[in-house]
Image (cartoon, rainbow, N blue to C red; front, side):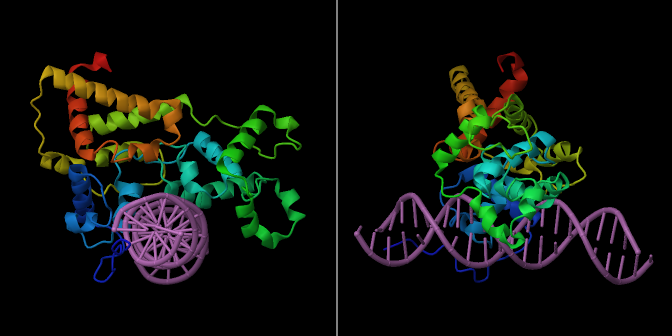
Length: 300
DNA sequence: AATCCACGCAACCGCCCATAG
DNA sequence: CCTATGGGCGGTTGCGTGGAT
């Protein structure tokens, strides 16, 4: 037999999340981790389906999210990635720690598409618009998916690498108007650390979000303060020096893995691997990290 | 001041794939 | 091996907001 159904949807709440719901979800996840999304709403006391909880967490409540507008460099990188991956937003998002596929997808549809059109570039084919106009205009949808054609993931990566290294010997000229950007930059890792430090040093998500959004015209409304959930956590903070050292090492490992070139690409998913690193431990260690970071800043 | 309209974003829908049983 | 389900993903929708008239 298979598994039980995800949810019956009868009597379940839909639409925008309230502060109380956000609070419940975050508190529950931070205290218990995620083992089965279907069980999360029941155990957290939410009248939502598991899918809805998952989306809310991934797209909005996750502590490692980087809020705020996209930089021009990020946009350029998105364009590059889209030119070779097509609308595979999750794959694209994997290159941007702290960004969600939904966020990137929305940004593409609302901003980048227009920007490319203004630059005279077809956002679907990534070719100059004049070139596209020779073709049938009604084929947009087909082209959108045909960008990646039938290549496998590995083949695409190989093709891209070949194009990057030998752009002129690829049979045809690179049509992309934007310079290819390496998939992992120092800025990226710096942002990673920045996010991490903000999370450790200032658990007030509202402040965090506002800090990030001040430079943009878009205003996010933080739905809750992490202070409260922090106060609900029952963790013994009395630790021996050896335990502290162990935790320090664990955290350093986590930071290192988050900032290493190889992991950054998949960092969003890997950091959410609750099997590998339960949120209880993470929470405890973050708290510890916060304390030791303040006490012994030279160690970091 | 009121209405309309365009835009941006959060959330939902439905399909697909991996996997438990 | 087969079936049913959970979770992930891309596409789409609907609502809130701000600017234009």
